Image (cartoon, rainbow, N blue to C red; front, side):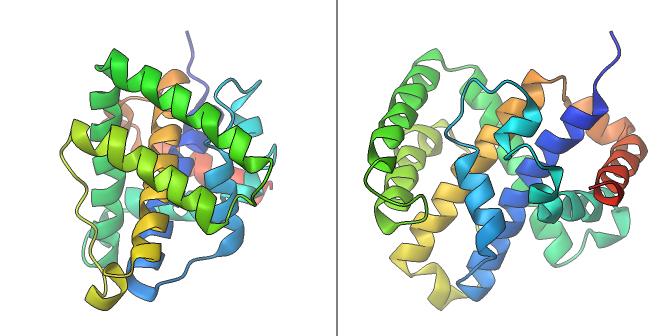
Length: 209
């Protein structure tokens, strides 16, 4: 069966968008609000009609992720910030595999995400309350699966508890996209041998959106 590279690339861009948001938060204590909202929103729909629907039915919502994906696929960016993005992206893939092998964790995750819907009736998606709730899901369910993703940035920023919560919430969204990526046919072989195909698809989505 032919793989749908549009869906695969979009979901992978979702993972990369989380990686870039984590990087922005860790170095600058803030990040672009619109991509943050798109990434956190993607957590809430576990039975979407399509991959596009997860990200608000508009590929431009993943512009940051698509551009980051291109940077990660571009071998020349493997130093400094480019290396960080690659490390976060691959770290999320590893945690996704651990989650796949743990039925109890999957059930707990679904249950806790259902709980977020109730809170959304009272609080904004980007409120401290919801971000803290997402962060605690990450700490309780994803972190114990190991290995932990080592976030690097400005030490003073990383000690800020609100930034820590945002980083964890964004990593949880990254796991969501990694799971989606696998569901639509994504796999490690593409990252090793299909880089050009993914790069071209990302470029095409950016050009036509």
